[in-house]
Image (cartoon, rainbow, N blue to C red; front, side, top):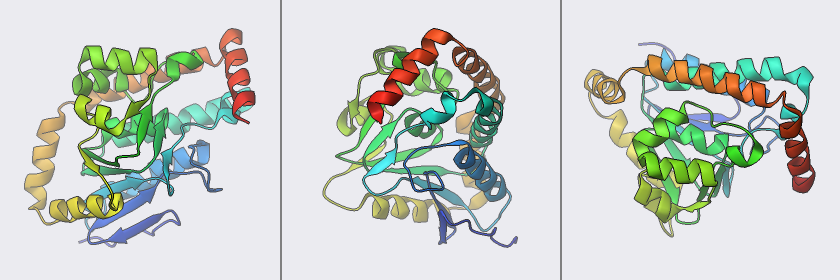
Length: 253
């Protein structure tokens, strides 16, 4: 049995469960290049650590994740390293061999929402919301959600969610299939950790083999991640898209 990996500051380890906080190093509820690199490194290490049987993704108090760091989108000198970090993180997540649960309490926007499509269970508070405004920004979805979203939500549900960019309440997200369980008036994290404990007690080989069979060919997802990232990168070189992103960034400031 292997030793548990060195636990970074934004993670905890309990009862064979690694709890990972989705945020930037400076405590913002966004994913910047360093956060993508940190997540990829954490998942790489967790994949080969026998002590870790389940991973839980959680956000900061009252907010799961508000998406990517706009300042990096607008700085062309950062694009190459950003694209490499994003690609590595999503490929690692798509091929991760162990159960991943999401603890959502608050807003899940953009990449903070698409990351949920890779989770085996998404447990959310009744106050949580979900939005993917990529098209509004002049961008395409990421994380192979152009495959995963129609699988999970159906084509019509995925089209409405991504192309209209509507905000889904927790009840609507559950009805579509994005959210597995809703916790009302209680601790979402407690509920998620309860599910994680259940999974961690299962026979390991049977659990991982069953999950692998259910998920199917992850190579297809990795190919789509590369295709989406290429289109995303092209969009960041388009003057009209950049002006739109600059306008949105000013409004958000």
